[in-house]
Amino acid sequence: MLDIKLIRENPEYVRKKLKDRNEDDSIILKLQEIDGKRLEIIKKAEVLKEKRNKVSDEIGIMKRNKENADGKIAEMKKVSDEIKSYDEELRKVDEEIEKELYYLPALPDDKVPFGKSADDNVEKIVCGEKLHFDFKVKDHVELGKMLDILDFERGTKISGSGFPLYKGKGATIERALINYMLDTHIANGYKEILPPILVNRASMEAAEKVPKFEEDMYRTVPDDLFAIPTAEVPIINIHRDEIFKQDELPLKYCGFTNCFRREAGSYGKDTKGFLRVHQFNKVELINFCQPENSYEEMEKMVIDARRILDGLKVHYRIIELCTGDIGFSASKCYDIEVWSYAEDKWLEASSVSNCTDFQSRRAKIRYKKILEGGKTKTELVHILNGSGLATSRLMVSILESNQTKDGHIVVPEVLKKYTGFEII
Image 1 (tube, rainbow, N blue to C red):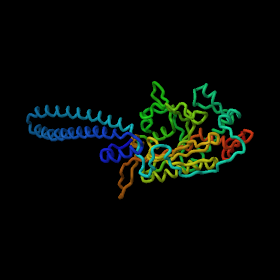
Image 2 (image 1 turned 180 degrees about the vertical axis):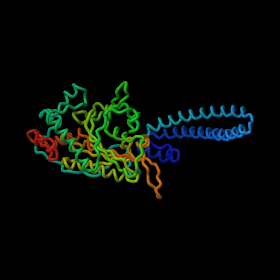
Image 3 (image 1 turned 45 degrees about the vertical axis):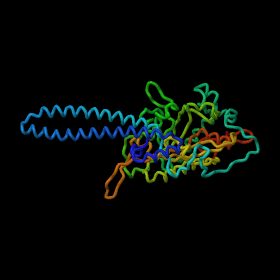
Image 4 (image 1 turned 120 degrees about the vertical axis):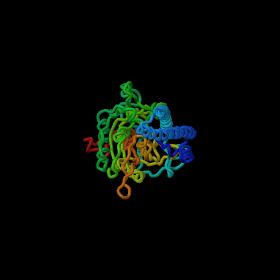
């Protein structure tokens, strides 16, 4: 959530950044009007409170002097009622401001490349060898069916389109992939978390997923619980309304969960197999850190995600998202894409985002910053999130790049100790 003070003090800067994101900036004028009303209410209430304090002192003197203070007491009751009225009006205005802020995205960092769409994203690096096959490659759906390791048709029968069913060695290799990721991240300083996959509305709001994206979420009625779109949501909320000590930062978590996204309006877009699913598995990375270190920590998180792909020996690239394509809560974002040999294109398998204080402001996650002389100041932490990684599209790349001419799959070397077999 943006800071209303930033909008109050530098509205033109906020407008420019919103335009860079292809966002309508007219909401800023509306917020300025509401905020102006808020400041007027506060001024009026403060005048009355000052008057009440002054007259209350006078009433105290009159009572000590055994004088009749009934008139002033009656007057102060009216003043107190007016103050209560202003306080209630202020509460409603604050709620109105917060409601508007819920729909405003994070502002892109000044160094984020300008662009209107995904076509303007910047390729940073291409890694791994692109393989050349002397036979026609099969896609992951054909391989999964032929080897009896994936069953998208029965997954559809059980739950609906976009709910994959893993079978036999397919389930084993998925589990192996998750364990490999977790073990690698834990060895590199992350603390493992296994969180709930149903969370309450307060948790979704703190992570900036509702109300903006509520139609894309699976919600249970009447409990008003949400199936998580990513482990980012419950892991961030571990520390909602908490204050860290400075020496506790950076604090890094990794967690595996099932993830659920309705993705309203996405039907018909690359829906084959794993290309677009409503349930998928993901190992999430979260970093709570000091603001001055967050972009350095972001680069480290990209390295942590890359370490997984390097071990699997898949062909991938890193792109930096432009202002027009960056995610709602991110100030800067990298996507990591893996190559699909059957689709002949890149598939997003991970995003690493620096959300700066956008989420921590709403979640009220702070830390005690140590100043000179040992004094402390409470500030918002910066929160970073990254996929370390999502398995579905990564599985596409793994199956397709490790297939043999006769249609078998060679298990990547780093997964063999988890699978117990070398070929499918």
